[in-house]
Image 1 (cartoon, rainbow, N blue to C red):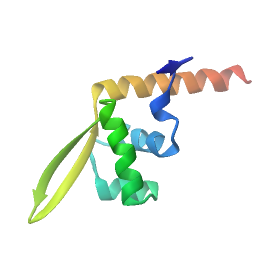
Image 2 (cartoon, one colour; image 1 turned 60 degrees about the horizontal axis):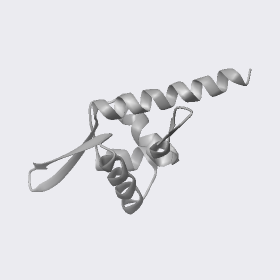
Image 3 (cartoon, rainbow, N blue to C red; image 1 turned 30 degrees about the vertical axis):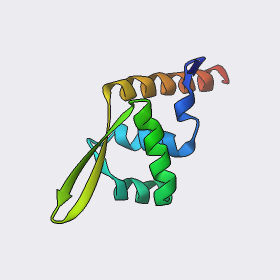
Length: 97
């Protein structure tokens, strides 16, 4: 899973984007994530499922009126793994100076 601090789950720019925006927001719904990341429904859904499988994010469904609203939040495990990934990136950048 980890190679020199990098986590394979964050290799995709979309997954990296999902984790980045969830790290600084309490929760975001599917449409907000889709708009922020400029991806299709199917593409976003597959990346969200991959992060859910790793237990880095969690999903919560609710209803607003008659419409389903799906919100995503980062889990403590996700915060930790993402912080380790960012630290590894920073170390790599610093080693190149």
